[in-house]
Amino acid sequence: MFLSTPILQEIVIDGKGHLLGRLASNVAKQLLNGQKIVIVRSEEINMTGPFFRNKLRYQSFLRKRCVVNPARGVFHFRAPSRIFWRVVRGMIPHKTPRGAAALDRLKVFEGVPPPYDRRKRLVVPSALRVLRLSPGRKYTVLKRLSAEFGWKYNDVVARLEEKRKTKSKAYYTQKKALLRAKAQAAKNASKDLQGVQQTLAQFGY
Image 1: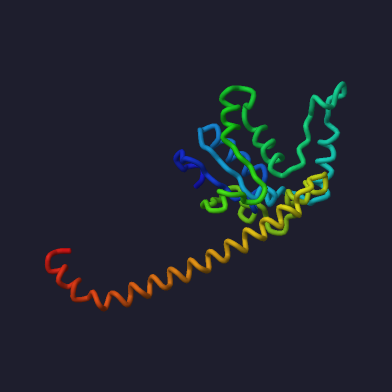
Image 2 (image 1 turned 30 degrees about the vertical axis):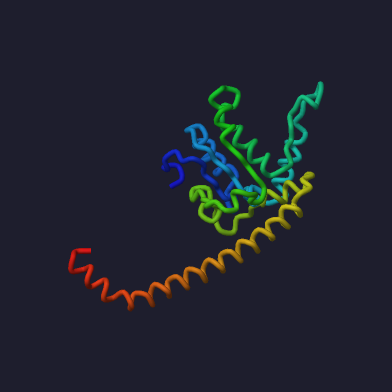
């Protein structure tokens, strides 16, 4: 499981289909242990509960502000990446040097920007919606909530993701063809090398 892995150079997690709080708690624990983590496709993170209820909760959050001077805070992030970052921040003692250093080890992105589109992406089984949420229960996708409250880049991210998936599919098709040709070449060469292999076998190779 993700939690039991040793400290690696950097872990890239695909946020799609994960529950917000469960993923954030796993990430916060790893950050405090010294692990560097990158979250991609944060706009596809899920929240439990119907969209209307989550919308009311966010509207209530927007009313929390400094009465004297609202510019002092509370700061209400609209982008999915910043919403997730703020949830993780709430699970870390970010006002201490240890917590601040842990939060610096986290990167969150919408979509899959370079160079992470060429890196292996992991999931956290204990935070996946299909494994943790009962079938039939309603859930909200974070990008819809963000777009409702002023996030303007939903269409841009969707367009870039479509382009990335097309490019990735072409690469994978080419890779499969290359592996198939390589296997066939090895099969053809094995007949020619049969005599050589028998001779090597006599000498213990």
